[in-house]
Length: 317
Image 1 (cartoon, rainbow, N blue to C red):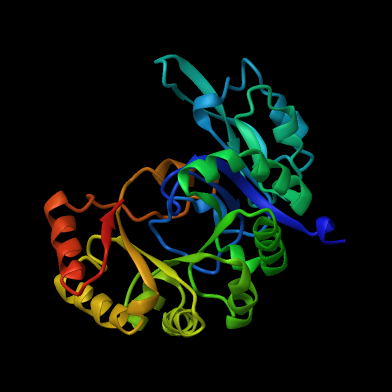
Image 2: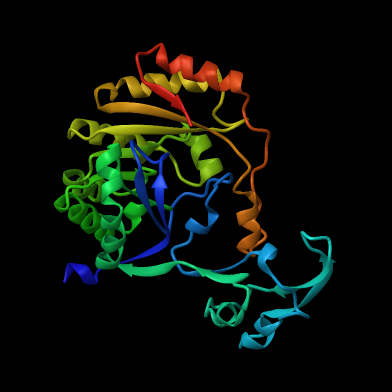
């Protein structure tokens, strides 16, 4: 019956070289309890399948327009005329998600797949067929499978059974987690997880709650418990301007990580980038997104050296 467990995925990415050692396949699951304003995968935040729109694919109302009549709630109307990427005049649809129930009928009608549904329910068996197909790459590169999100441990039954079956098939496993989940979920995953790609976004709990929406005590406690139970931590720190990029803040990272040092196999610094900004437009929600200049190479090297001075292996993504 375990093959009937379903998880809501939004992508499965092969030949991934940034989500742990070697060549990996990363399974991305929807749903996350955090709300990082710089999130580069905002489509991962909500747990439900949701409508997205990619303007660059859209043929326009006059050339297509099937979405307008397809919506049973009248959420799609004729929008403003603008200039597309080719420099041509085009009238895009206007999508009002206020009354949208994510039925997907407009996406089915869209000839160019400009409107599409993000979030697919998949069984363990379906995902495993995809993962075992890539097994030769894992074996030759020292790679494996990474289960990510969103927060994959917010779908614990699916994630843990997927990890278990990967181990049965001799596949190295990693869990990419925010750490903001019940310890019971991590504890169940431990026997089938070779490493946790563990996000540490901010050491100040009040600031963590103000900016990200949740405090950080649970995150730090779970990291310590993973270390106490013999788990391995691949620490990931997003380096965000005006948030956590100061020398003082990295001193706090160093102090905490020293308490779990035997469990830390690598620290990965992830400099802020702007590549996720366009994804917010696709969600049609008008959400505010954090925008800043990426940290300089010099600053990244300084922060790397700061942690290396404490004896850690550090890399810059």
